[in-house]
Image (cartoon, rainbow over all chains, first blue to last red; front, top):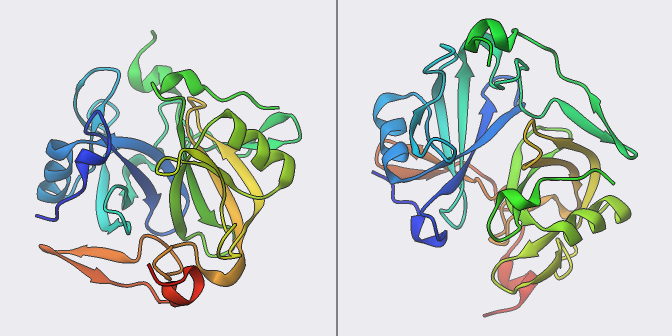
Length: 127
Length: 127
């Protein structure tokens, strides 16, 4: 198993950039610990550490929008990775957009440039 | 000025993903604080917070490999950004590769897939 430099961060978490393996769009960024790194490599499905729920997080567990790993890249310092994925359901963002980065900075405001793929309340239930 | 949620992290730093605006390649990830965020938007050149040198960092200050901002994307939680850039000199990585993510996980090893653009000792001097 490739070793990452988890000691680099105080909380043992490193950023994982998720990129669509075909379009190259950056879909999201989440954090991994040793366990989620191992689970991702072992299962071929992106796993993270949920900082809000404090638990291992299989992306798509609730929505079904699992990310199938196509390629994993490691940076020069071994403290950041890129997961190139096949995004099932076509949407990575819990707000229903294909990418979490669906807004562009235009002067002093944010312009929506992403497309809404699903209705969050239909997928996650009303909150 | 667009506000990011710097309070989200204990150290006031948020990750900035740098992506080549033409190829879509992820070039690097670095961290921004409020000051580097403002400097980036004001100057159109990527600025970060250097965690090793504890100071504002204009990327390319030493190497000349400045990153000209073409587009800035903000994620759903306003705690991560993407800088789409024109990478001067063709290389983002201090090790001389075009991208810091020049290695791919292949079974239990790392395979170099990136191309070396410059010799680090020639650019930064011998260390």
